[in-house]
View 1 (cartoon, rainbow, N blue to C red):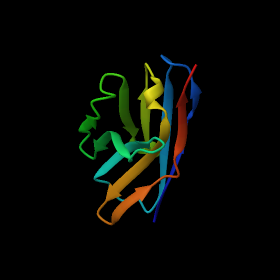
View 2: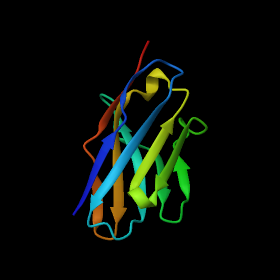
View 3: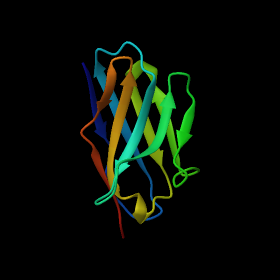
Length: 115
């Protein structure tokens, strides 16, 4: 079993920055994909950024150029650096890991962008 714990969310003013972390533990052998998703009230969960085991990355159009996903293999941790935050980035952000056995999700961390 894999456990994911997110951290780093909070309240930030428009134009500010936050860095989210997702630490994975448990039976981690290899993963195919790790990603950050978000869900705003009344909206569907959407992919924000993802990274594959080969370090290929992809981003939602709405965050491209502002957000950066990265990972530290030694720490089994994936990060999401979020810059130039906008009020529309407000959501609960979830970490996901996908491997050959299935998909695993973290509990989510709230990001609120407001003045």
